[in-house]
Image (cartoon, rainbow, N blue to C red; front, side, top):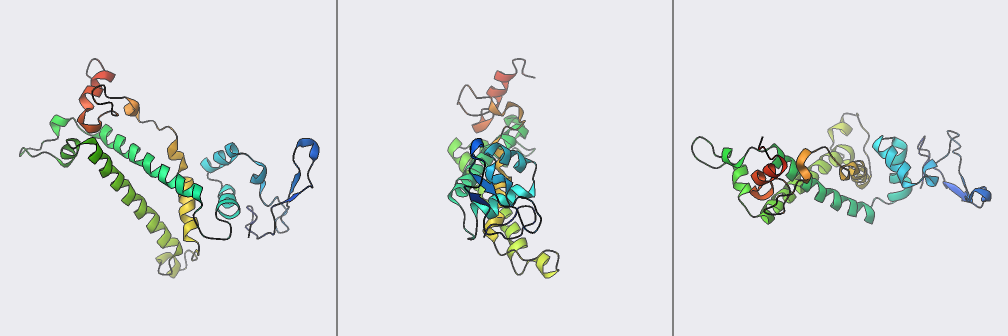
Length: 226
């Protein structure tokens, strides 16, 4: 059952067809909430750009629109678009994590400790690029599962300490919680200020530092080698 995004009061319908101003091209009239007196869901007439801006601003109304009136509705099941978004976010998180670790790593010559043993990162950089990708894919998958699992437990489990202490009521729709987390994480898909993350290595065609080619990429970016 849809709700009013302003006061969360259940409503029968969000809009009525054939009651709008036909001269403007809109043939619907938004329903006014009887509880708060405002439009039940103003985002029915808004396009994706407005939705995205309000998502970035973390407005609770747009999350109520997506979770209760668009994606989840009455059933607590993942929408196909949310599953695709989750896979895309995971793959992009692999790229960001891999690039961030490579950017913050020391040169390959410094990956050897005082006893002459190669560090863990040095061993990883010496592996084939496919194995490196599988490592970061597994790392990001476990990290995502742990993040979603902990939030779902705290909000939806009857054994949650927040519920037992009366701090937070038990939420009966755990998949809606994960959907909200995925939607709020969609800003990962837009550019981040990670310096030379887009510099390609002439030798192997990989991004800067991937697969142990970091020195060649740094030389290509900075001719002076500084």
